[in-house]
Amino acid sequence: MLRRASMLLACRPILAARARPFSTDLPAAPSADATFTEAWTKVIPNMDPPKTPLSFMQPRPPTPSSIPSKLTVNFVLPYASELATKEVDMVIVPATTGQMGVLPGHVATIAELKPGVLSVHEGSEMTKYFVSSGFVFIHANSFADIIAVEAVPLDRLDVNLVQKGLAEFTSKLSSATTDLEKAEAQIGIDVHSALNSALTG
Amino acid sequence: MAMAALRREGRRFAPLISPRPITAVRSSPIVPTHEDEGPIGVRYISTQVVRNRMKSVKNIQKITKAMKMVAASKLRAVQTKAENSRGLWQPFTALLGDLPSVDVKKNVVVTISSDKGLCGGINSTSVKISKGIYKLNSGPEKETKYVILGEKAKAQLVRDSKKDIELIITELQKNPLSYTQVSVLADEILKNVEYDALRIVFNKFHSVVSFVPTVSTVLSPEIVERESESGGKLGELDSYEVEGGETKGEILQNLAEFQFSCVMFNAVLENACSEQGARMSAMDSSSRNAGDMLDRLTLTYNRTRQASITTELIEIISGASALEG
Image 1 (spheres, rainbow over the protein chains, first blue to last red):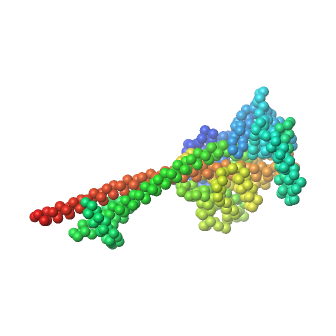
Image 2: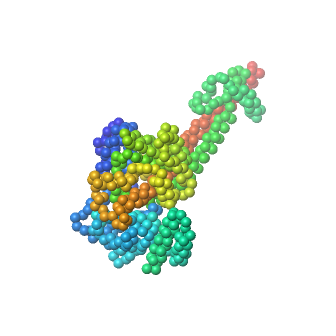
């Protein structure tokens, strides 16, 4: 009972002390949690309320008044974090509307990605990845989050397999009967032709 | 000595069902001793029963130790995957925030649990939290449905909330967990269930001994629009330009689906880690208990054995002294 009372009074520091955070998880100070915690303790007084993702995230810095010099990029894939809060000069993302260049101070944007080449420019070096698809969020504080389902560096792609795949899907499209098959074949063609142009262009 | 042993065995096999109260062994009430009455009322205690018990406890200890090792190796494998996937949901929370206290009409609680048992209390915790969320979101015009992943939660929720269960998915871990599998699953759920808010309940893996029950909320695009228009947490969402697509709604729809599959992937991996960790600690404490039990049984066995030797000696000596004197 005392523990619950103290928890109601001072949620954040006690939660932080008891949560034993990883070095990558830092407790933030979210206000949505307070309403949830209160509502929870009213209805279910015997159990501790569950944690929410906000308490596991590092808080993002607020929008600075002047344009920062570097863009902070988080490039995440389901099986790895390719780039985590890396400071770069520019990224070019393959959005559905075409190649989009992102510089520090870019306006806040949500864009969907199509299969294509993503290039990260840092000083004089440039790293290229082929991304299958995903989303990019550009925040006002010059943070860019790129979430892709699959991304490979360009040198890992095999030209012959790409050509074979393209031919295969083109034939599938011509022999497709249902809408679903047509859509699947079209997706295959899109990805493979993007791969092709990535390798040749 | 051998004759005495044979005599003892013979007597033991005769009346095994003894209605007399068991007072011979004082310390361990767990050991059922079988008493045979000697001619003078002297009681023989059989060591066979204690020995059998010791053998079975030792086997159980071996099995639980092996299960702990297996769980440790599985944990190592899944842990790297889960830690790598931790970056996946953070951009979504950074963009859309987290609104567990959002007020919506149709809630869907996705409970993630394990298929196999012997993993401590994590499944019961998940089910309790799910039921708590159900209660929290109950009200007029509001409905909450369950989507269950895993056998253990199914067993618990089917008992009292059968009518609220929409979808049950089991045997998730038959093949190693991958994003493709989880996205197919997420697609199934999104197709079959109407939702305004999806609340995913799982155990987040902090360390081998600590698993934190967590709930992640994913909102449907309509609710996201509603919340961003009304200001508050999502008020800044309007300031974001939306590139591509015909309408903003289309992009938000894709975004919500992508967010759900990413959050599910991370949740399933974290739950798998928590399951293996919980199983490790459960099996560890059970091997330790078995070891304690074995110690107690060994003491009982030795006492029993020494008591029967002493009784035998007394018999011989009293017989001898009766002959002499």
